[in-house]
Length: 460
Ligand SMILES: [Zn+2]
Ligand SMILES: [Zn+2]
Image 1 (cartoon, rainbow, N blue to C red):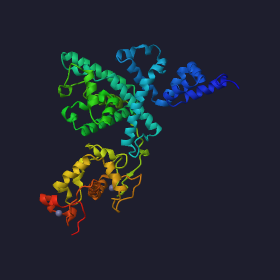
Image 2: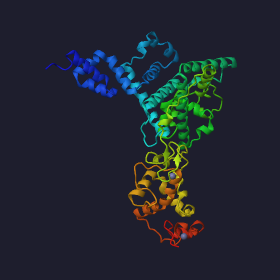
Image 3: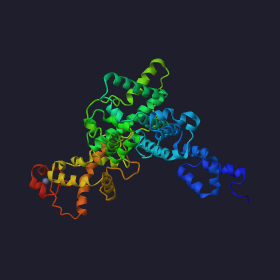
Image 4: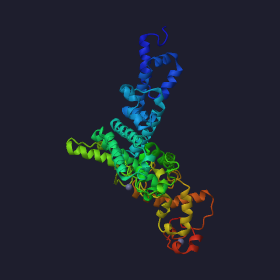
């Protein structure tokens, strides 16, 4: 038998296999595993790398490569006139040194896509449910946003432009900078600009959400904050989302301007390069275009026809996309953010049945219990420990309820769950008050509230 890879046909097949591999990890493992594959890779390295990069990144690869090129040559001058310009074709050829950055950026973009799909298309899944066209449009727009934030970064120059420069100089500098931004954007088609705006708006939503969860009031205390955050780029914003706070952002800013501005966010002076950071330039380009182009077509990333109508599983009410609560969103209930709804979990005790929410003794105990228990756990207990009332659906994986029903669900079950927890912990439980949760005396007589149990059905 002929040795593998020795005949031309074998070699072709080996090359096809390498080119079809979905990730660089798979490629490098394959090349290390066999001499024949290794020999093929040595001979056709560039072709293989390009194919695998395309398999991994998808059709947004040309833009992804531009971002990587920028990361390799971070100064804009070098980026625009650097060695890549000598031979434009090699610019779009991936090299082994690009792989690490390419993979890292692609991971960030893929995570953003999951989040976008989860919030804007289908909250049932935490991984992207975008169609291939939607996904391509999203990834292109996200890579473009990455490139924009790299080309026009929030650097020391952006902070210092107002100070120490005379007015004429400042105006010229500003105009020049704005023109450069518009030039970059004017290469895009109109729908690409719309989509860029769409992903940037989504990034802003996430920034606002982090601000609400973090309760740091960064947005309220600094009018440029959202622009600053956007200009730091998608990777850092994603980190803020994942860590539920702005630490990654402030760390990045501090690295950019170590000695000059230690309390950068408290500095209220105007930052003309940051105000309207992306949106102002996109609008300027679009305004020029609309005036002399009647073929203006706006195309959203998500095709509205692919959106399913959402109805509450309990009451049947129609809901907006992402407006229902279920297994993928329980975790958000434990956070004090309003973006996913107006439900503040630690204050869930105010939804306790009857007059319980006004019983000062109970409220204190229940809140202490709620703070350390994620809603997911309470929900699980209600079903697994047979606390569920018959009016509610049996456990079912495709169960999604509206906010009104969620509130009612909590009202119906929270006191049952609390008393169950107390029994489990072998706490001493006082005798039941005849009037149960409807007792009014529990509200204004501390002694009564302390001496009797009200987490029970009324018997009178
Ligand atoms: Zn409902
Ligand atoms: Zn009572």
